[in-house]
Length: 384
Image 1: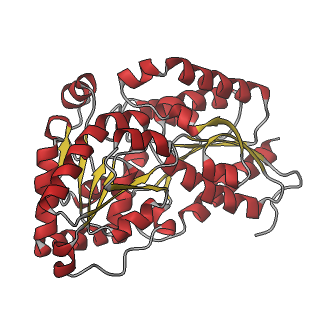
Image 2: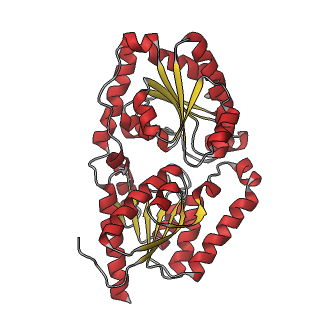
């Protein structure tokens, strides 16, 4: 693609989680090919840094969830917030790209809009599930919503928001596993992946559950192999402190490799559940939160649907979900055991997971997003 403007553009970008960091890095790679000399600054992690982005705030500083986690890290979060706001006011950007993370990004979108910076919002917050009122803010301050699930396009269009379904970036990075082990191999030495989540607060809540689960699985299956892929937003040493059983192998990164290696998995709700589904590894989903967060979700959010995107895509519970009070070692043990000993159950679930790829469309999300960002940059040049 030919260079679209004389002066290389400057892009402000926020990717506040490990998965968003990877997707944004893939997008930045495409944009750098379109615009040699492009400059990018903002919030990101290791993947964006490797692509040459200037990291003003590391994404790990914003990995908080739930009221207690916010209070524990209030000064760190506020410091990061002030630094981001200062950058918006003190540095010029031709375009902003915001990924997910609505608590921060919708605030920043307001400030960017006021400063006259075009905003592309890539990977929508789940406003269709809760806090639907946020659509009013999105309609006002976001120039282009670039959504990764087909049902989101209709949702936004019906509410008057400029939107385009671009496909899911995981399809570009993830290949479905080519094979599964035989039942004899699984029974003799099951391979089990345990995914606690990518936030420190998730690790705090989930580590005790997974520790007990691991012990019970090793008692039931003495030759079982257990691996925990550690997200880039979590220090390996911190994970080892709370998952101290030496029989649990910690893997720094390579979550996709661990998913493809495993016969079954227990996965904390989040992007990792869709990643596991697209790899095609049978799993169960769990999530533990504080009592206040659980009360809000159950009684005040107004959402009573599925947690897992693979279930939302199918419109039924193909993967068992265990939330809060149900997220016990007992419940997880019974489900993981069922998937290990039940070959037909395991294969039926794997088949349903493979169908998720067809629902999500074709590869090329990063390329399509780069083209839409290019349109915003061109329009800005014309207006200037």
